[in-house]
Length: 171
Image (cartoon, rainbow, N blue to C red; front, side, top):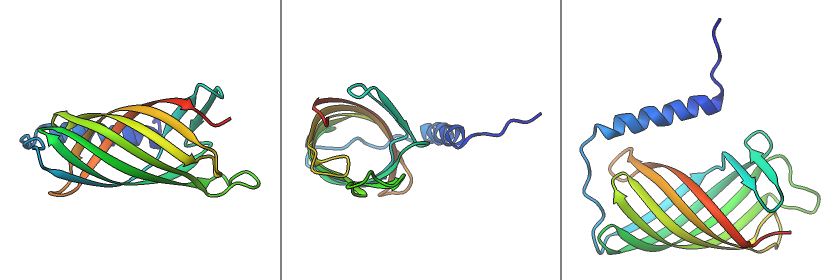
């Protein structure tokens, strides 16, 4: 009897294989004071739990695609300050009546620390004047822990765990 791997198991196995293969590559020098980092990314929330509404969300019931663009400056070796803009679109299911596929717009200033290549952490403030497909504001502080694995000289694959604390949350 064989078992079939679910897409999530396949993705986790692929990420682990990439991490292990990247660990054998010689370490790159960390970012230096004066370096500038431009971030352009597409991301998708795999799973979440909203402690305010007591609801879980996974790829099975909600599929949103977020685009992030940002610019960051290393003001000290390995420590950066920057700003990201986030745009999120609902792919599936259709938004509620009166809602829009354009789900979220957020300004996200942040402080980040590349503490040991390829690992980093960041403290992010999020101001989202648009959430849930409408003009519903959201303010939050997020802590991120991630790893950025080089794919080419100017491109990295990043995996991150983010833990948000919303202090002005949609109702």
